[in-house]
Length: 216
Image (tube, rainbow, N blue to C red; front, side):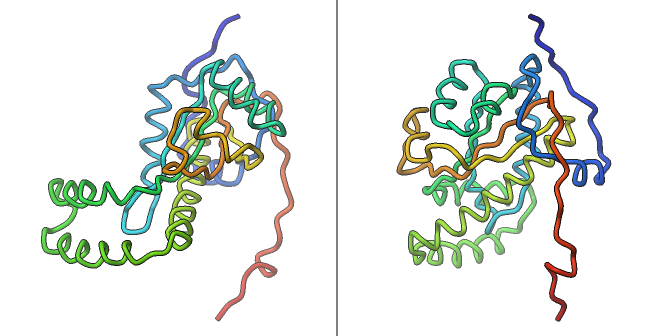
């Protein structure tokens, strides 16, 4: 069986990216996304915004047959997506991401993105703020940021010509340890399958703007 690789109909057309995205359940199992291209995708994905640029998201890319079989046992309602997709990206947040605060701010100064005095002021404010957060409040911030990066992932995948499906139906209590991650540190957010659809996703009805919007 031949394995198909390469980019598929890359586009910069925002309407095609945003309005033609569908949640896909069945993929062409012969299509493989190279790790080089997946790295390119994730580099673009990581440009998503986050609170004071803390970037709490972490990605586990499950693209091997062995890895997908492990995951399938944890995702009983989503096995088709897991087993037919090119890969499944498990999105976690790092509950210890504050450890990267110095690196993030120091690099911003080094690269000329931020003046030293602004860095010093922001760190002076950020350290006590993060130290004061309850675990629940910190989780809320990290989940929000991880939701933003997950949506960005679906849009970037679409720009590369791939399809995706976000999934919440899996064993969140076991996924970290099954893949040898520290389950106390890395908290699961969602799974995202990615590949080339063999069966197109269905369009869906969306509530009118007048229903979902209040003007003030």
